[in-house]
Length: 119
Image (tube, rainbow, N blue to C red; front, side):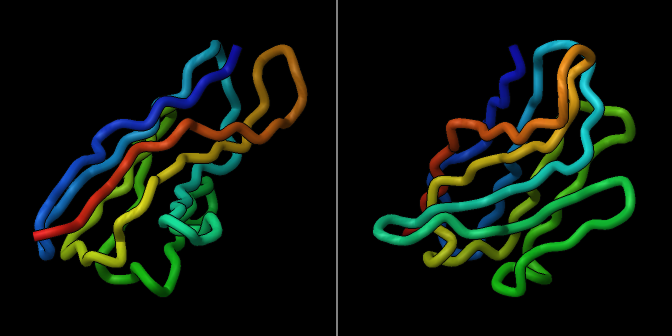
C-alpha cells in the first residue's frame, strides 16, 4: 500500500526557516510528479510547489523563499522554506502522482504537517 508521510513542521518565528520532507513508501514507484500544497484555517487548499523530471516551479506567493527538490531516484522530496511569514501558517500536504509496480497511475496525498509562524 502506497503511503506518504510528511515531517518537519513546527513553530518558528517570522523570518525563520523550516524544511519539510515527504517520504513515499509502498514498494517500487515510478513518480511522475511530487508536489506540495497547503491549507490555512478557513481557506481552501492551495498549490505551493511541484517538481517533475522536466520542470520545477513554485507559486508566486512563495517565489524566492521556498524551494522544492528531490534527490535523483529518491522517493523523498523536500520543501525548503526560508524567510517565513505569518501568512505561511497552514497545514502542508504532499501529493504524488505515481505508478506502483503493479497498478495504474494514481494520485496520493499525505496527511499533512502543521507549520505555524508566530512570534
